[in-house]
Length: 342
Image 1 (cartoon, rainbow, N blue to C red):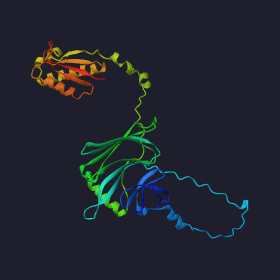
Image 2 (tube, rainbow, N blue to C red):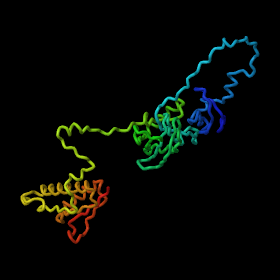
Image 3 (cartoon, rainbow, N blue to C red):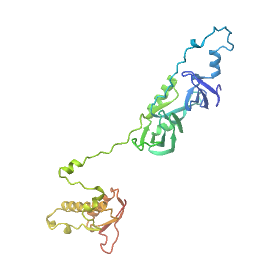
Image 4 (tube, one colour):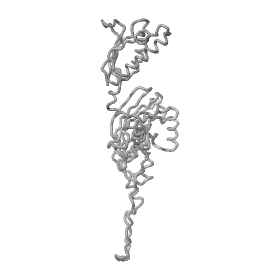
């Protein structure tokens, strides 16, 4: 093996020096350059002393240099520092190859890295799923212009509809930036197999997918100017004092139709049920607005149609902690008690 972990190397394309941090296979190594880790093929790097020997003579010939006076010395031009270009946050997959029984090169697993190509540090909650079922999760923090190794998945797992979700937040929160930003990625087997073949042809080491380019700003809440409305005669209420303008709530509501209408005998069953459900919704909303801990709805026994309709509605209400329809000495089985959560 030409390279070992810890060897100093030079990247031929950029002429940057680094070191080997992992030997992945007989063709590829993981290198670290200026704090950033990424894979490279062995023909893309070299030992730095090879370059030094080939570019410079070991013993320079001695020459008599002409005298140079101080006023002849040119001032050295200050070279500007090359800034890193921000290119978003990526999820990168590095195939690890091995040889099968027929000596053919096959992909054994995919090494997954989170790549931060921005000048901002992020906290993240990562989750990987197969067929919608959570398989692996990790919480961490990634610095600016760094990568973070997450985990490996077997290559055959690409056929199991792998999906990846990452919920980001700023390591140093900013008032104008969103409190968190969730992104997701789902791999399609056919596309992955095609990209790996392209990797081999183009001699590129990774499959990379951009999760986002720029972290979003905080969504601005709509603002309504109420002063002009008040000047035109509209009455403006203070929301903090809103309850005092509401009708008082009840702890027990009787939904028997004879309690709600004097002309119920000429109504159809549908009309009766509609009136009862409208009354139920009215007192339910008032109970929630007044933050009432519980509410009893008397619906009677009958065919159970009104009871079932009320129960179906309660199952969809986020304010409902639970509800029960059990024997009560006052109402028998004809009432449901609702308990709220706030």
